[in-house]
Amino acid sequence: MAEMSEDEIAPGAARVALSRLGPEDWRRWRLLRRAALAEAPDAFTSTLEDWSGERDVEERWRQRLRSVPLNLVAQMGGHDAGMVSATAPEGDEVELLSLWVAPEARGRGLAGELIEAVAAWASAQGGRSLVLEVREHNAPAVALYRRHGFREDDQGPRRSSACELQMRRPLTPAD
Image 1 (cartoon, rainbow, N blue to C red):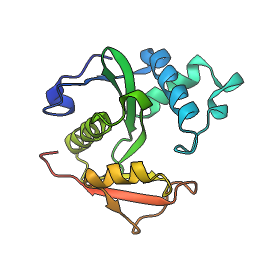
Image 2 (image 1 turned 180 degrees about the horizontal axis):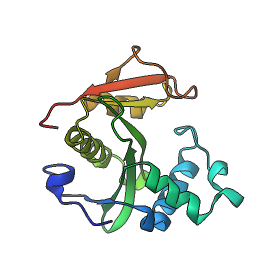
Image 3 (image 1 turned 60 degrees about the vertical axis):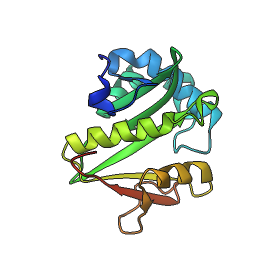
Image 4 (image 1 turned 90 degrees about the horizontal axis):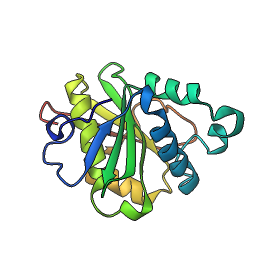
């Protein structure tokens, strides 16, 4: 898919190039997702094994990109350095999925730009809140989400039993 303008993704995002990927970009998504699963195996409900061997096939990667409406890759210095996805609104909620930033790009604001890109997209889709699940022991991720307006949410049903903490961020039309 085409590059999205900074205004479409995150106003003010100048250091990072964000690309919205579609099924034709499956190779790019595959490389980054497998790197994420290898580097941070405890951060995701999927495992590298789930996406290896006989399950590591083109059609499965294409289907993943078709079934989730927002899939972004961030580049820093001309290299893919981060990724995030988001679901279509369910009611007034959009779920943020699969956020990951390569270790060499951490601490530079990339994760925050990806979160804000999802928030802008979710708001444009009519979402009124952004939800996510994170493992409670992943203190850096929990702190990141809190810095970006997420708070613990004990109200809704758990989407996955593997994650211990559900978080929510209200969205406004300005997001």
